[in-house]
Amino acid sequence: MKNQLYQLNQSQKFNHKNTKMRKRTDYTRFKALLTKAVFLVILFVFLALVYGAGTAKNVPMKKIEKAMTSSKYTQGMQVQTPRELARYMKLSSTDFEGFYYARSTENLAVDEVLVIKAKSRAQLNELKDAVEARVDQQTKNYQGYAPKQVAKLKNFKLLTKGKYLFYCVADKPDKISEVLTDVI
Image 1 (cartoon, one colour):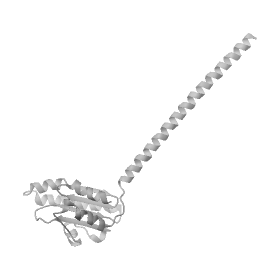
Image 2 (image 1 turned 135 degrees about the horizontal axis):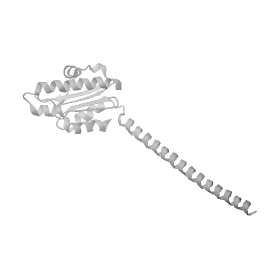
Image 3 (image 1 turned 60 degrees about the horizontal axis):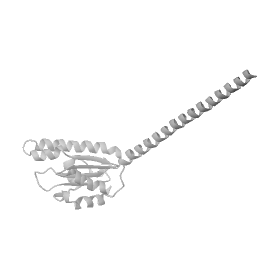
Image 4 (image 1 turned 180 degrees about the vertical axis):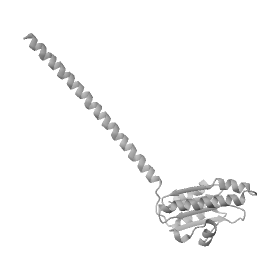
C-alpha cells in the first residue's frame, strides 16, 4: 500500500511538472508569436512610409508655375517656352503632361529650374538622363572662365516624387525644391 501511495505521489508530481512545462511552453510560444506580430506591424509601417514618400498629389502645372514664379528664390529667372525647353534641355514638351522651365535673365548665369510632370513614372529615367547631360554640357561650357557657375552646377538638385521631376541650379536649390514639395 505504501508503495502504491508512493507511486501515486510520484505520478502526481510528474503531472504537476508537466503542467508547469506546458505553461512555460505555451508562454514561450505566445511570446514568439507576439514578437512576430510586432515585427510584421513595424515592417508594414516602414513599407507604407517608404511607398508614401515617392507619391505626390496630382497638381495642375498652372498651380506649380504660380508657386514657383511667386517664390523669392526664382525672382531673377524668366519662364521659358516649349521652344527653349527643346533648345536647352533637348526635351519635347509634347512628351509630358506639363512643365515649368525658368532660366536666369543674366547671360553668363547657369541658374535654372525645371519641373516636369511626366505621363508615367517610366519616363523619369529618361528625364534624369537629359538633366545630367545638360549639367555635363554646362560644366564643360563654363569650366575655364566661370568657377562660381561651375560650383553651382556641381551642387545641382535633382529629385523625383510621384510623376514629377525637379531639377535646379541656383544659389539655394533646397529652398526652391521646398516650394515644389509644399505644392505637391
